[in-house]
Image (tube, rainbow, N blue to C red):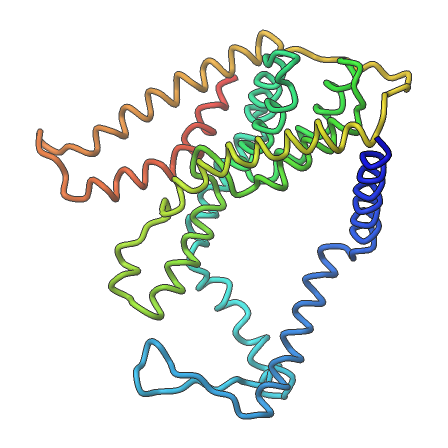
Amino acid sequence: MAENVKKSGLFQRFLDMIERVGNKLPHPVNLFALLAGLVLIASAIVASFGVSVDDPTNPGETVEVQNLLSGEGISYIFTSMVDNFIGFAPLGVVLATMLGIGVCERSGLIGAGLRGFVLSIPNRLITAGLVFAAVMSSVASDAGYVVLPPLGAVIYAALGRHPIAGLATAFAGVSGGFSANLMLSATDPMLGGMTMQAASTIDPAYADQMNHAMNWWFIIASTFLVTFVITLVSEKIVEPRLGSYKGNYTGDLDKLKPVEKKGLLYAIISFVISAGLMSLLVFQNGDRCEETEKILLLSLHLWIPLLSLFSCCF
């Protein structure tokens, strides 16, 4: 018995140490600024040694490391800034997707859909359901951070559980599962574009065969893995550490209004109709189109904007 207590004590102290270190980390914006500064310093140091590498796109040629802290390097940073942004491979797909997501969020479809899903889950599965909804919220970019953490806190309080545990669980699901999903999200064309751009520097022919859905099976499997792991950690570690909830707040769960349910129904019907019409693009004059794969892939990337636009009807 004493051994179990000792093990528990050691584990708790380990978690406390992780919490203290995590709280001392600087703000993410400051982290990016520090990393950018390190890149500048590293370029100056490496360039002073005359380091160069073989150019994979031009056999026989080499690429030398440039000192970004020199006058020429600083000038390059500012004069190429716009070109770097415009030349970013996934920019077009990401902008088009975010337009649809913006309409989707502004119309209330994302909030109503996530809230309706979480509120329909049985109490014994509420943790897993909340985490799953948080992971799936990545399809709407950062909307999950706005909707789910406070909703998780309210649901947990209404069930007599610690609201901080619900907030932390939802936040962990959104953050930990941000790139996992059962569907393609705005992150996939961005990461896929960078991957294809990097692959083209080594083997352009191979890069031409790649597409933005290259990680789809992986992120599908990751969705269930992340849901299981976060649910286990939340119920077995986080919530017991917080102890029983003794606050006065009991939570106030607002169910979906009739107009929200009607809007969700219209959105689903609109999506099914648009998906059916889009599937007709696979065939031309009764024959299968030679660009079937590209059209189907385009359909996957466009479903968010189309569904978002049709959701404006409520």
